[in-house]
Length: 218
Image (cartoon, rainbow, N blue to C red; front, side, top):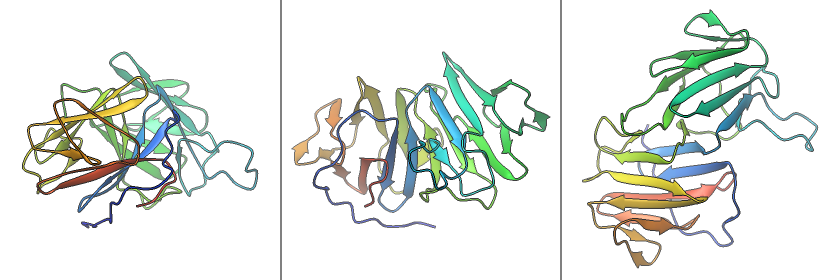
């Protein structure tokens, strides 16, 4: 279902390096961005708040760190710490993941894997079971340097109403964007590859989105 978010700049947005971000796209939805080379997946944190939660934390009966998704060069690997399977194969230690793979954690948490663009190693995870994450999202992106948003089928997030695609790039712990569409980043007109400070709104004709530190809400 299409959801419209009020994307106004937030005071005091986090600017320190982190491994998780939230991508809010007006009229499209919210997406968890995981930028680390190792992304943990598991259940809720529980009562021990001193223990870190998994990067992808489900409200489900999973171990706190049930599995780890590891990106090595052009490969994506599932490292199982508890019961898991990939495409029906039980994972004893490690298993390669490719576009179209189906991951099952425990007995019922199911995710599908896609890589819409051949020019980007970023993978998208979509939850196929009824389980929700601790923070509700419409999809999960395992961000690998670049990511494409826009109307075409090779975009990691489809934005049907946008006139042009927007390329997101991450360099030295900072996000940048570039598009053939005219964009404004915060209060500045974008010129080529333009830095996107965390919390700044990117807008243009039918285009409006923002990246926040994980835990912020629009």
